[in-house]
Image 1 (cartoon, rainbow, N blue to C red):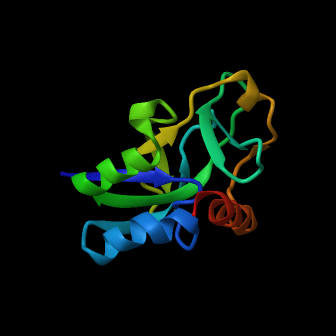
Image 2 (cartoon, rainbow, N blue to C red):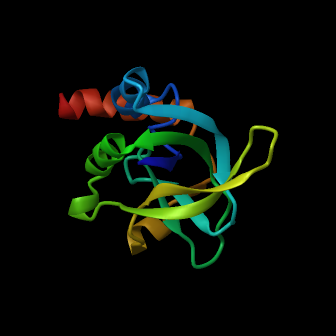
Image 3 (spheres, one colour):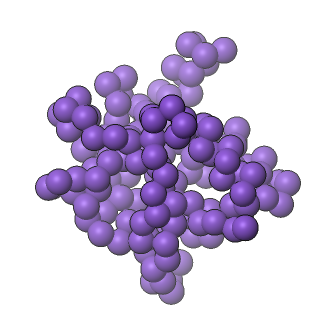
Length: 149
């Protein structure tokens, strides 16, 4: 089984979790990069958590935007590993299929899985962003090394 996954944060190419999770899957032939992409509909909000560097995406009741990211084709093992990373079974994120526009010149729209955070009052109050930038990721990597290793 092959599945498309839309990533918008630390799993994007060159960022912290890409090197730990997607890059090894690509090297093993279990995943491949498809294209840069964005959500087809402007009904999402992306915020940085209260530490200021973990991106969270959720459905907006109002004031949403299109969110930029990347699409990967992954096998069942890689999808299961991403579910574990995003703590789907613990309720941290849920995986949902959404329409995304591929930005490869063809302007094709496909369905891809994305990890969405549950909406909370705390998330709604945070500043919204439409793209997770490398400098945000650098803060994430430093925090992870200081707190998780």
